[in-house]
Length: 286
Image (cartoon, rainbow, N blue to C red; front, side):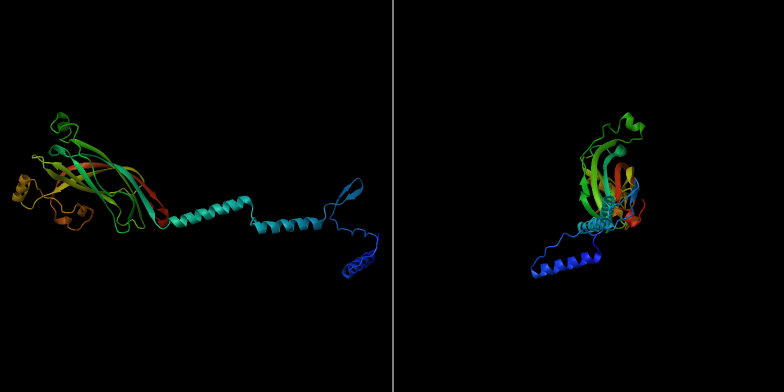
């Protein structure tokens, strides 16, 4: 085996000749000894393992390739981190407001013996300044409907003189807000006919939309305003112009209601299907 100095001198001579453009005839150099890691002993001979340089070079090449391709993490960890980032971004985008999804129907009304003839209902949704309607129609009017059983029959007299009028008018709205102040409420106005078949107001009513998710049924008590004097009340009945509110939306507030004299006038049953979204982001628990 050639010594290290001999190998080094031959290597330097060959490099010098290559730089000067010439070549020299020299025997091939023996391979340099490679450092080996500890091997295993088999049949009395030491079997070397893989070279450390090759292993280190392969590992560094793989790390550089992974960093270049952006795959420094494991695929599972990368997928999990991307999913967490997407969920965080989605939460941040939807945390600017919470939503109220309202579905349901105005089912029926019971007006008593004075509710003979066809009836119809006008509804209006009222809410505070922080609420915004995203989709749906907040105002509407139902169809004309009559009671299936006359008010003078034995069935209505056994039930206390109440004849049920069925509308089953659907409701569907979506609201968004940042505050529960001014929670939406529905205002109803029921119109009927008098003895001369003239269209008159039979009652007003209002109720808040339920604030808990799920299916709810609310019975709205109706009432009618009374005239200030018996003479005005008699004239209103004769000419088909009884006392009524100029703006029924006043029922959604409290201003001016303390001076109104009213009398009861039946009830309306309404079904609500309520769904809330993103309320936990504002620390609201319903």
